[in-house]
Image (cartoon, rainbow, N blue to C red; front, top):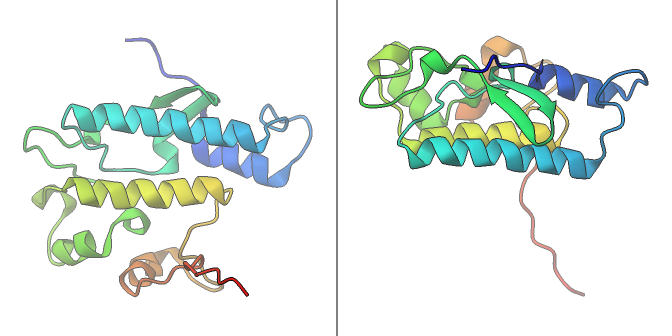
Length: 164
């Protein structure tokens, strides 16, 4: 297997956020970010078509070379053929999966595709908002991410545009 290369997605977003010159990603435009999202979604779609769940969806498990060249790493935690993923990050877990986890370990519960789609949606929102977690609040510590998701705190609510 070809060795995966690139920079962690979390680092890429940090560099985009800072807009500091000299960084490899400093010349990226919005369309590069959109192309990156399409590339990531294509790889996740491929996995889903083969009944594989990434499960531990997070920015540290995706390496970026270019918007059209990404590598998924930490693949030993993927869920397939009834073998559960034994790890995860609570900020990417759906409220339903968090509820199912109460009193159990990640390795005790099989995720379903809807759990994965929730995680992917959180990841996509983080990408579109350059690293901002959708449920982030001032003073929210990492230990309380699960609570924010359970309470369905979402900083970008849907709204209806009305014509006058």
